[in-house]
Length: 361
Image 1: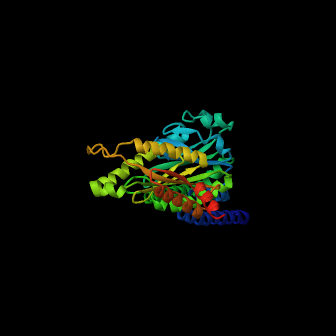
Image 2 (image 1 turned 60 degrees about the vertical axis):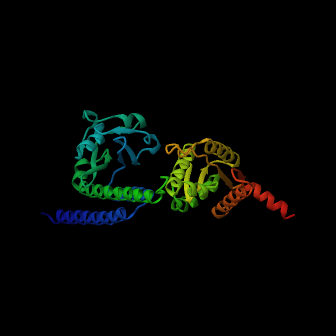
Image 3 (image 1 turned 45 degrees about the horizontal axis):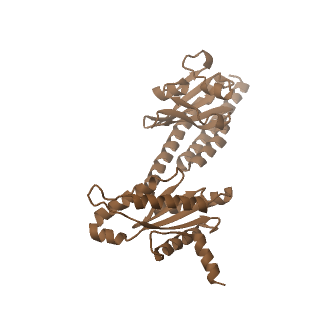
């Protein structure tokens, strides 16, 4: 071997070692983050530093539908493929998802397994594909695709080992986040009703208020408390009292829009978060809710046929309050005002503010 060849080999080995070390550093970052958006940013920023590929993507398996959907897309406009779904067994990615084995094809158009769905949707031309399974404990959670490699032989020799390592760590990172989200989700659920608890309120309201202000939108909060609930418990016992709470929560839940949230605040008190609803819309909603509760029959299975009413307080951001604390306080005060006025009543935070202004003159 000539001196020049020895130098070139040493340089190549040194570069490969550096890439390997960088890969392991990235892997530590991947498996230590539990934020999905942060994981996406890290992958997009660092992937190209390690793997010279202008077009690559990660597709995740949706267990409910057994379909692959795009999670990360580089080299294409993400909005063009966000609604594309591939069945397990469909196309190269679907085949890898079905078999759990990697595939490399040099000419996609001549391979009978190739599906042109993405190309037809985006106008992109797929030539070569490297597709690797993302596996955790033998279970497939998605696939990693690298498209149109310029120097295939050099890439396979130099970068495929790194790609395999990255695929393993990406799979572990995604599985960690899914597990964390499941634990987090369960910690936000009220054991009795199956709706949200106060932990969820503390976790989500700051972000919701910030988003509302940033978008120039509205956020209404409804406090509601069952009237004379102590009498229900004293008459029918705690177990049936708890069942009333469950049945009432179902009545409320049946009226909620997809972005609304029902929170059991404690005892027989509930909070409803209504994003993108101003005072008028919130009031209309609570009027419908009041009718639904008043017209419902509870503990019917037990032959009791109980009627229940509730008191309601509404406050809206930014009209009534400018921050989370003031919003909750005003909705709570409106609820207590509703109780004071005979129960089975709806009070608006804006009305309280008018009263304060009038009494202060």
